[in-house]
Amino acid sequence: MNDAEFNEISKFVYLLADKSKKITLEGFYSNLDPKTKKDGSPVTQYDIKAEKIICDLISKKFPNHNIFAEEISSKALGSDYTWIVDPIDGTMNFMNGIPQFAISIGYEESGEIKCGVIFDPIKNEIFYAEKGGGAFLNNTRIRVSNKKKLKDSLLVT
Image (tube, rainbow, N blue to C red; front, side, top):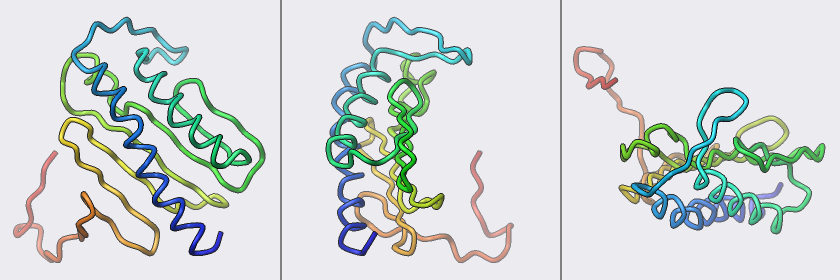
């Protein structure tokens, strides 16, 4: 992909996160009827709705791209371009009213991650990174600390 096409991808990743925001916020603190997936993990109707919105938009704009989605919308077309989608990353928190979950979307080209977004709809914070282009929080550049000694650092777990 050339630079102009890649810039289009970057903008599109933002759009995908924004379009699924409404569904996740609508579902938070609502009556959920979670199901259990084959792997034993929970899935809600909001995971499925948000994923559908994201994957439908990807399929419409890039019909020949692969999609690897956590819930139901995966499609393998043998393309060099793949989207990785977790519509509600932190479903257990989401289900229990804990406001720590995110919409996670990545874009891969020929096996190499090119960009990704982690969007926290509760805080309205969007973390975005692009290979060779840096990382951003709400369009403000973020950087790795220049601390050299562990004792001078802040660690959080």
